[in-house]
Image (cartoon, rainbow, N blue to C red; front, side, top):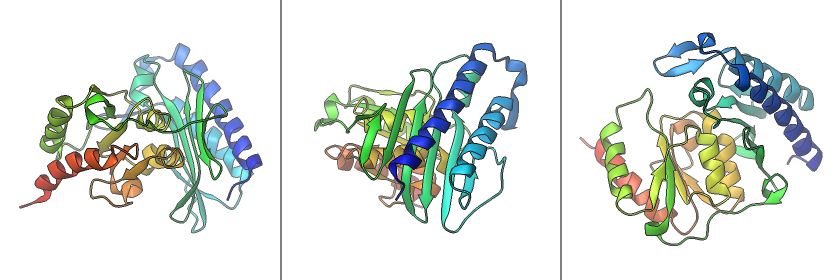
Length: 267
């Protein structure tokens, strides 16, 4: 397990990278946008921030590999891997919307040891290790709400995989009628962090990648919440679907999502 020193050093590296993002955010020009694939954008900011994080984290654990969104390094390990999204909420960033984050997780085999989500514009550092889950050093926990009707949920719209659109819209329709509402912030990492600290009761999305969810899912678990994929297993890291909620509402929330997406997969 990572010790307190490794956690604090990781947070310091994340803070420094966040400062870089914030400075670039103030002067970013949309002419710097590049298109990786339909609706998937990137700029020099994503790449520079990732390189900064890889360099800093590489010095902390030289033996560790990396799984990164922008593929600025090809180094995988059978033992330890950092999973990094240098700018979760790239589209928000590029359009001047102050909702974006850095997401970092340290993975040992199938076990997450450390998770960090830095909500840059709000200067809120969410993180978890074996000692628990925290925001800016203060312990956090998931909501105690037992009632779906008074819950506030979050989601992310599909942006390149539209095969599940009908099932997704059916879930939205059902939840809109039985909750306080749904929010779409444009950063899965922040959505998950907000579940961990009780701002949201739950979150679901499909079409995600490991770097979108690894840190946030771990923080939720350490804060007392539940996480699974749409089939109720632990395959959310690489399975491209995730449901997360407090322990009281998880089963009800999961059942709604699973029931609708299960219909999609049946002949």
